[in-house]
Length: 339
Ligand code: NAD
Ligand code: TYD
Image (cartoon, rainbow, N blue to C red; front, top):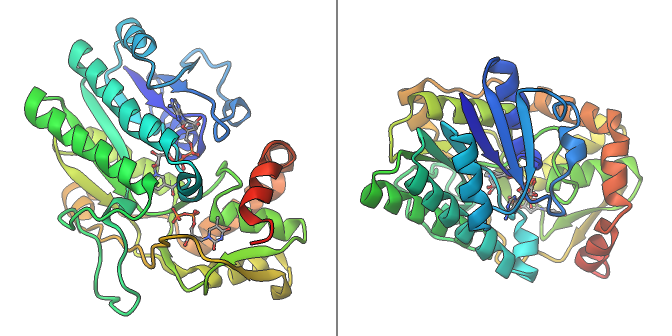
């Protein structure tokens, strides 16, 4: 079987490719990625020469290219990870988010309609639900929680989800959607919270904590997310949404302190900086549906997963060293300089 993975040169997509090739010998994986600032072939180095892997550089918004690839490869599964994914960038420049996250999804769905696929899976996010108050720990996002987006990023992802559902209903496309909480693990781009804190700590640079640091995120090890998507592809019901999260809520400041402790660095590196605009307070997933229906459970505890992640960043300095010495420096200065 051939599967098409879009956005596979990014964080979760690359981990999914490694996971799939490992667990499904005999399958062929085709990766379509535009190689934006967030995607890199160095991430896929270990699989590039495999006969069961093909990399295609291209934009999911490019109708001709996408259709040509569908016709050529006839993928059984299409898993769409391709997206602009950073909330802060969506606040300073929303347009590309609407383009890649919404229009890109529309192009993929049209290709599914035209060529037919066994399954289209949309990798979405819990951010489509907005946020929960800090003083109501009894509340969680379920699949029935109304959409209530806070950033152009989450709005573009919610819009794409609605389009996927419309293609199921109107055209009978065999599609599913997963909405996962915050992921962490190897190969995450340095702009995101955990790698940013790890890399700054390793470089003895200040760790910028937004606002009061009390915002809560529900952290899931990336491989647990990959396994959830695998189960949805194999056993999930068409047209359904599955929330994915591990009941692993942490305040940002506590994650930062844990990282510093694990790296043997002082808390004096912590800097409280101006808050993000529209900053969501708390994300927390109720994963009851995927647990009950598909038997999914997270397998990686936070202490273990964070330990492996720190080890990966310690062992792979050239991977992130190349990134943080390039155009990322300008981004960092723009985002954090004088904040
Ligand atoms: P990422 O930014 O690390 O990677 C995105 C990848 O998509 C990059 O390789 C980039 O080059 C590629 N891409 C972007 N626009 C493209 C386009 N128009 N055409 C082709 N390729 C394009 O993102 P990530 O963290 O791996 O997230 C992957 C998906 O998972 C996204 O859809 C995101 O919304 C979703 N998600 C992420 C998290 C998280 O915590 N990171 C949580 C839940 C859901
Ligand atoms: P992020 O990794 O951007 O994910 P998301 O906003 O999609 O949840 O950020 C996770 C949390 O960390 C979020 O509450 C914002 C906060 N944060 C900081 O405090 N400092 C930072 O430099 C970054 C990037 C994030």
